[in-house]
Image (cartoon, rainbow, N blue to C red; front, side, top):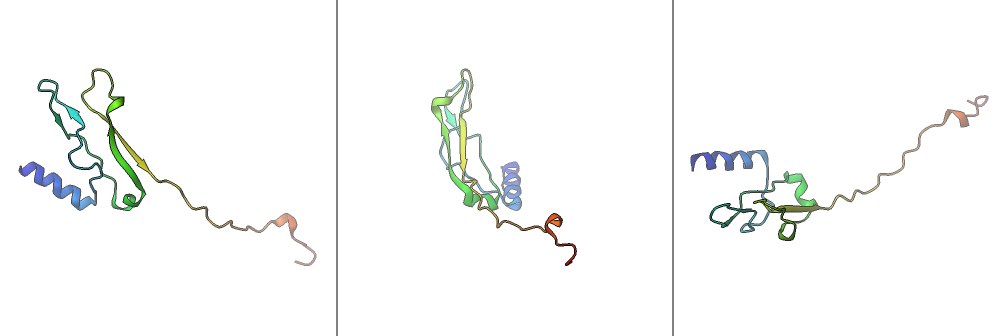
Length: 97
């Protein structure tokens, strides 16, 4: 429990937020075949507003693998910046200049 507390404090100090909803299984134990949530997704705080979804895809579990694929979809649409105008020395009227 002490090691877990240190990990939790480090996650909070860095500013990470848990994205994968609680209770979604990500790992199947080889012997008991029970499911647990070993894998996590932690985006930085400034990335939270880009999150569309975070979930596992059970249909794409690989052969002989014990972990499920975690798919995180982010909105990475960027607004275009204003076009900057640069002086063009070829268009200068050098006599007037």
